[in-house]
Image 1 (tube, rainbow over the protein chains, first blue to last red):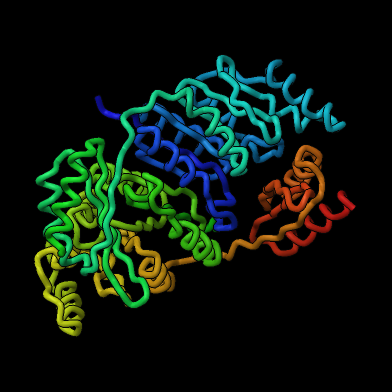
Image 2: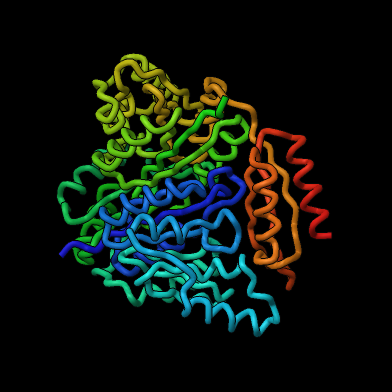
Length: 239
Length: 239
């Protein structure tokens, strides 16, 4: 059975302008790989309702799971929830369960649940809430789309609470080895290996360290025996 | 006149598996912003010819410029050049000018220009070469698509040599200010500012530092006077 596939959608002008480095993609990629879910595509789009809705539509039909990051705060540029609702054809309004979560949180800190904060309780009809242990404002799951916060600490907490709900596959295993040759000398033998072990995928990532150059050769797949055999084969070719 | 728009396409299983963090997107985003070119979308796809060609087709019609990163080395998984040629309807083969560049480079180091390395001279018909001062193997420009290496040092060198060939716009200016209030208290005044200065865009990025919380409010636009006025207005509201 093939492993489930996933896509990530990062929402944020601040990433596209270069002001902020996105770290959520790498975090999610690592978590999904460990869970045996293949992250197959990532898109980063602007804080623009049409761009967000268009990407959500395209990705939610093409992949088993979609994860979004960013744009669910209280300010005027936080439009992800409404754009996702539109893309998925769901109604959206302030929802009582989300409002109650926010009200309890802000009451504890003596903070006013004003109109701006109340926008964070806008949740599409039929969506399940994703808990936010950091700042209360929930994410949500609508169909196969998981809408999460952009602030890394909150995104990571939401990923942790969402992961157990996903159907994973056999974990993707990998083995790697540094080969101290030019990539051009590695390429031929590596292509032979790729042909001999069609159930594995091979990549080669060149490096230069302290005057030495070479490539880190990585094999990935679900078959641990084949991986070990391929790495032994590789080692023999470059001894 | 609106500023030119751009998209970035990152090619690489190693990014999607979480093994490698992509730093090229942030580098390009910063360089394009300074040049007055708006990076509007980023996609990351697998080392898969169909996925690469599909993304190149979609992005090259939607934006003024497309920049790709990765998949132009000598190994079997380096398929970007062929996929881009297919997407753009161009023929591709080993090209004499690229072969000569590689031959000269490998002759200097006494390295064999074998079949694997010769694949890096596969350049689409009609494409202009992008110089690679690090390891010789060139990138290329085909139509509005700029094909560059994934290794950050080479990618950055190629961006530097490509930038002067692009038609930029008025540089996008920004001003920012830390406001030590909850984002929910900033949201209302910020929405008023966004309405008062429709030529600017406003973002708010929450932080927690040493027990203090607040948000960094960023205004962006081409009108320096409006930016200064908006920031003075903001400061007045939160004094």
